[in-house]
Amino acid sequence: MRKLWWIGVPAAFALLLSGIIPACSGEVGGTGGLTDGGGNGSGDGVGVGDGSGVGGGDGSPIAPCVNCKNQGVGNGGSPFDPGNNESNAVGTDPGGALVIDQKGSASQYNRFLWVADTNLPGVVKIDLDTLQMVARYRTGGNSTSRTTVNVLGEAFVGARTSGTQGKFGVTKVLPYGDKCPDTNNDGKITTSKGPDDVLPYGQDDCVAWHVETEGDIRGLAAEDIAGVNPAKDGCAGFNKSEFPDAGVPSKPSEHYLWIGGLHGKIYKLDAKTGNVLIKIKSPSPVYGMALSGDGKLWTANRMSFVDTKQCKDTATCEAAPTCTQTCTETVCPATCDGAVKGVYSNISGYGITVDFKKRVWISSGPTKRYDPSAPVDQRYKTGPSTGGGGIAADADGWVWVSYNNKTVRIHGDTMQHIEIDAPNKGVAVDTKGRVFAIRNTGVHLITPGATLNQFQLQNDIITLKGFAYAYSDMTGVQTRLAADIAGWYQHKFTGCDKTETAWKILNWDVDAPTGTAVIFHVRSADTAADLANAKWIPVTCVGPPGGKGQAPIPTGATKGKLIEVKVDLNATTDPQTQTTVSAKVNAFSVDYSCAVPIN
Image 1 (cartoon, helix red, strand yellow):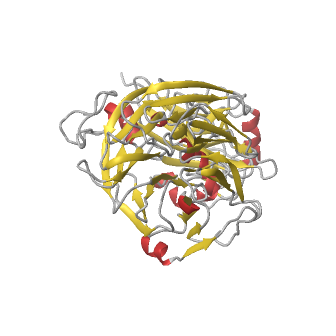
Image 2 (tube, one colour):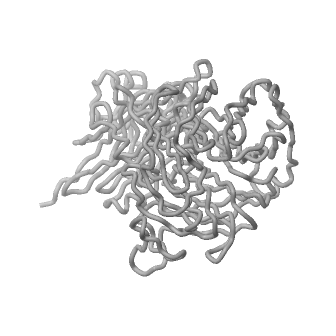
Image 3 (tube, one colour):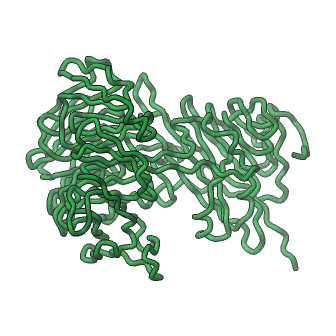
């Protein structure tokens, strides 16, 4: 890189913070603009720093941006707007900064409630903004009852029996409506457009695939793994081999699906294709599934688990023996903590969920709570009596359970509880904290208040066309809450009106407390359609303590009418107070120049 001027790292950083250096004149950074610690430490000559703070690389300055324009979002620019931008699990703090919010925004395709219709057989799609049924889909197999939803908003529906419509297994349904792919190549999108518009199985373009299994499916759990996840990797996961001037895109996110049933098998599927990647004998017959952020795949029957981080393929997972232990009311041993497969022999249930503290909850008889991080004499707790139905945990620490034609609200820590007159078979929570109690032919809505006895109940806000026998994660919210706390936000900028745009510099202002990090990616194109299909290219990872910084827009994203910035951020939990400590994005912006028109 040609060095145009030099004032040294400390001086440049001081001038940037003081506002003396103009937005387009650049700041310290490497030739590739990458840092793996967000740092201003010594570089390796290829633009990857190894220190902490702001900047990085070889210490050389970014070349001045001549006649640049600037567009920004956050403090000093247009406000962050998670509700109208593609985002997930983020919100804004009182000062307008972007932060992790477990109740925060969901992807535009995660704004649906998917209710299994066992008699259709299939699934009902309900818009959570309008509370209206917007589509019904027939799925493969018969007697559908369980659903799970991944971070992309894709729904997966399990079939308990076989029949004329198909065999045991799982069906994937896309959330895109008239934007679904033309799977039958007839030149148009053919899909359900309302509650009375149900197409024969195999004729709806939004029904992506059905995978047959050896027996019934009684549990499903979506697994989403970010390509570079600051919640798990910090800036150490920002691989030096990914520096953008080599044109290497960031590692793509991975999406999987775990399913199982009473026939004693567990399967791991590629969520995109439906290909079976792993098939193993389950530790106990599967009746309900929930995946925790630490990688444990829990099932309700005998509270068994598979550690998905250790179960990498069929051979290695099958070779691991199943660890068995017995919990009592006074002690639940740590014998199986490190096992690949385990079973807690005397804990059985019906519905299952995992809360944001990674505690496992099971309904049936008394509600049971298992905390794998607690001392062995405090792990297993029994709560109020509940029946055989659904169970859900929300972002405010409440657990909601089906019981005896009621919905039980339980305080997750104290086990204090009340019964609400909302009969249901299954319960689900959405990003607004609302609770949906699904009975066989309708849906009740509970809007919780801050205390146990504060709530608003609206009975039968939705009348279902079919027969719902549904309990599981019907919105994808619980899957997200139980996982590590991470989210993202995307923002598009439009360049020059009549001439070619040259995207030059990405600027940021970030606070990154210990245990958090923020990662920036960019992509560019001339049209919105091409932009949506463009690959993300990594720019930088900002680790503790954060700060203000700049980096060049990488090769592969410098041209195009449009540029989109994606910011991944995470939070950590303070071990003393058990409160969430979030990374904070105060602002980011892009500098760009316009070509001189040719007369």
